[in-house]
Amino acid sequence: MSSGLHELYMVTESDKRTYHSLPRKKYPRPLIFHDGILAFRPTPLATLVMFMWVPLGFLLAIFRALVALSLPYKIGVPIVSFTGMKLRLKKPSSPFVSTSNMKEPRGTLYVCNHRTLLDPIYLSVALNKPLTAVTYSLSRVSELLAPIKTVRLIRNREEDKKMMDKMLRQGDLVICPEGTTCREPFLLRFSPLFAELSNEIVPVTMDTHVSMFYGTTVGGSKCLDPLFFLMNPLPTYEVEFLEKVIKESDDESSVCVANLVQGKIGGALGFECTGFTRKDKYLVLAGNDAVVAANNGPQRK
Image (cartoon, rainbow, N blue to C red; front, side):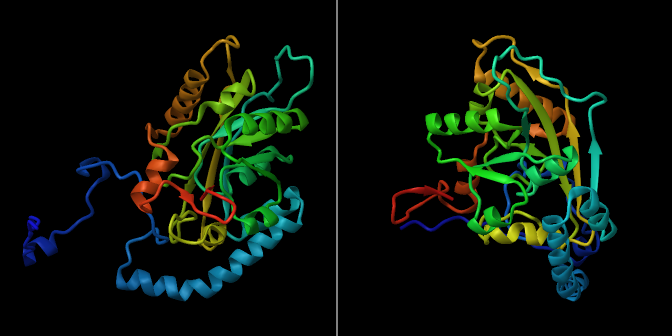
């Protein structure tokens, strides 16, 4: 067995005194995937402040969740805003009007990037109307507590397409085609299936700002992700509606449409578009391809 090579770096006292955070543009490689719940550098003082905040933050998160689940948007939004939650919204100057020639009425298809599990809820709040959210993976607890209707995909292309088409005939539908969340200013590859559902697509940008806890995890419990997001002192969501994307013909490639929508969302956010997928994320952070064995066969995480 050959021994591996190790590089050692000696840090002098002068280096310690001149220490500063490395700017993102100087990273040897782009930081796209990372896990862990802390959104700050855990210095002794910052860690002490966090532990002092946690009891109050937990109670505040429960209060925010109860208000959001039990009260209408017009009443609940001002209350949670008073507790420090912010929603920055940029809506189109004119409402979305369908120009489709389809005979049967269909809802609006909203496509957004994926920052936390709360994306569809904030979109529903921004529109002030109920939506149906398609989910790739969602804990049973989150499904039960969700204030909007959620539908789980089974990752069978034809069955998922039929199900989403049915939901779209019943009302407005929101999809996060990345299939998983990404914390950094990057967009993962958009699954093109959504581009086969409608000739009119409304891209929506989502961005979040937190100071203490990330609202996403790979190694932790998924059902606690919204709780950690709500425990932040001043969590902020930014939602922007972009111009509608209209397919020129039914023969237009769904992959091209998906890439176009990804590019529009990435350009509006200033995020870099990548070809990485959900599988790539889980291979990096968890060492698996997001598939776990279950009694009734393989299932996606």
